[in-house]
Amino acid sequence: MQLSDVARVRVDLFGSLAWTGDGHGTGPAVILGLAGEAPETVAPDHAAAILAEAQDQQRLLLAGRNAIGFNAATDLIFDRLSPAPAHPNTLAFTAFAEDGSLLVSERWCSVGGGFVVPEAEAGQPLPDTGAAVPHPFTSGGQLLRIGTRTGLSIAEIVFANECARRPAHEVEAHIARVRDTMMDCVERGMRTEGILPGRLKVKRRAAALREHLEADRFRNVRNPHEMMDHVSLFAIAVNEENAAGSRVVTAPTNGAAGVLPSVLRYYRDFCPGASPAGMRVFLLTATAIGALFKLNASISGAEVGCQGEVGVACSMAAAGLAAALGASNAQIENAAEIGMEHHLGMTCDPVGGLVQIPCIERNAFGAVKAINAASLAMRGDGSHYVSLDQVITTMRQTGADMHAKYKETSQGGLAVAFPEC
View 1 (tube, rainbow, N blue to C red):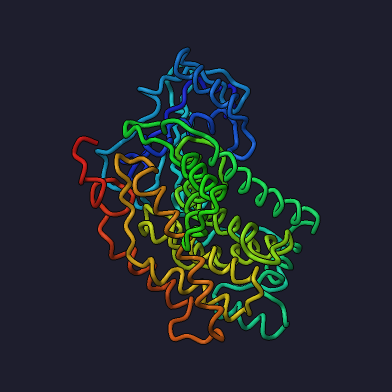
View 2: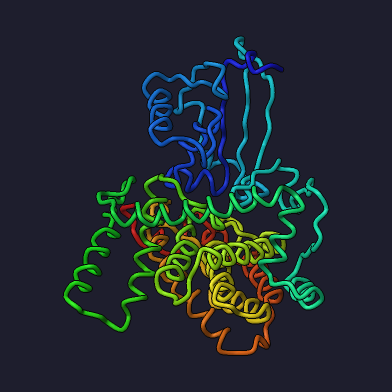
């Protein structure tokens, strides 16, 4: 089959994607993907033009090259009637020829963190097609043992592994780009006003929070909890940007994208001795923790509830902050464990299917808890009763036991406390 053979494409969304996809912006995301765009490179104005053409002219430039007719009402189906799929984030792509005959049909699953795999591979470890790394690890225990044997920090272990797959300068450039994108998102969110998209008509509040904090500073009003207010501001700013469809860093998911940037910004702005090198250590360390959850449990709210999103983000941020502040590997592992332990069982129940209530505020609380987790861990020597590996196993089992209505379907919890939504 050639791309030029395709005259029509239909996309069917199942499971959580069907129930909350409208509120999560899944429809526009699918259309932009069909047009050949990528989240990290598409210009917002260009994205808006593509969506407008699909809606107003019912026309889509497939993969940016082949013009086809596209009617979202018939070609983008939120299927809530079919039996629940094996993976809650499943979608099917079907291509048709000019005469209506079937060309190809495939089912894929969004497994969290931006990873999309064929349905047959959902639930399996992602294939490793890269070069062999010098320090492979699949558990927190292995990570600590590597550190003990080599004398390397967790950040150094991750960096060495990354450099086995691509040149060091590319790794450094990527870290810097992630850092700058996070900080730019905080800035943009703190200065943008208005109403968030969606039927809830939620008013953006980060800009007003920033103004209140700045006014207090100019009046020399310094409340004891001022830093906590700033952390909440940073997280809310990012998640309002996410809710508005702006560019965020998936860390580990878009719904939990505010936790890491807010704690990283807290480190940059409020921690004595903070430096770009420390921010680099923060991100490399957080990467290791996120990988452990992705490998051994899940970072998908549709699979394990919000413990897999904000909970994992909190764990990653706690570890990153501890590392940036000079913690030992054992203290870093302890910080990550504390961050997740106190998110166990957290449901994913977005009101109206929108990533707004309780998601935006929940990121603020996850960020504050990450800072607390890092502080508690650094007051100790790294020894603790429950290991990070044990809490990851517990999180996975808790998610398996959680009723489906509490896992990003908007059929339980807060989501049904508002019948008008």
